[in-house]
Image (cartoon, rainbow, N blue to C red):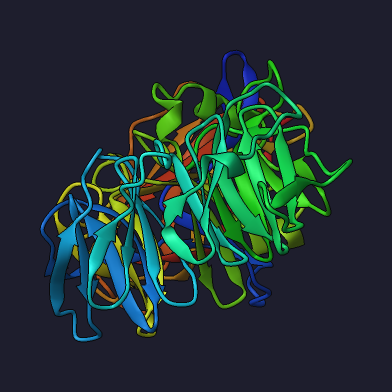
Length: 452
């Protein structure tokens, strides 16, 4: 009997609940063995060391830039790192955008420009605190949480306080800004208001009637563009946090109850950070929390019946270290949550030389209420060609689990990953697998027989 593995089940708080694979990505693929597979998530190999812990990156004029600690750095294609200047450090993610002739950097509540030769700070006192920043129609647009501020068209370092704007559809504070479909989106805590450029002598952007989205975003870092739309973490007035994606002028909730529980258990929700990664047709949305990272494979979710969610950790289920990937020089360049390293994503499973654990639960096996025997359990797929071990534990109620049983692999390609079980199950059986290394699991089979 085939046991589904793309979506696992466990028990939580007296109910059945979804169990998400850890450090394994769900993918739909008709291999002949099955219609999908769980593939070990990508690792990272360090290339260079920067002047501080990474706070974000971008690409401008074909060159890669990052903010590391308090420094703006340029990283050439050969991973030669050059410090360009100081942009302050508040230990949160920095922001980037660019116009026709300069790169803009938001860091530590301030706004900086890099023109290819000189780093300058906008010191106009009318700028105020910079909580977020975008470029739109020749303006650098910022917000201090209350007002929407625009720079002068003929002088991006100057601000006219007469040209302040505000989002007054709801009295919620502005948490972030986005430029999307040639419009400016002012993301509030409870709503998202849309503005169009209409010019004039005052504030150049006017509210678009009947375009307000009735859901808001938790912070400037909790949103990102992905796949021709944008995603964000937030909710409506007096609602718990969820994950939303913009859909044709509105927003659709894509998270389920288990994902929402993780979001709302976050001790510092203002530090939740979203990141988009694209690998060909594979589009991933990552949601970084303080103790873990939640991911969803959007392409697989569209093809499958439910969201293809997974969890990312480093080490032995510790916080995920690989952050803020930027596609440049034909590869994804990432920073490290815990060090000054800059790395590239690879198909190798190791994170900076340390292989993390992976784990997944299979779906529950149920034989119409009849007791049954489990003779053996076997996994099929692509396995490492070096010695390794995979561990299996079983449960008869998805609450209490047996001791782990190791199946040691020698690296031979003709080996079979099988466990003789010999277990009697009164009504149901659950299987949990754990290990290290690069795997692609396509199918799980159980052989057994009903009793009575």
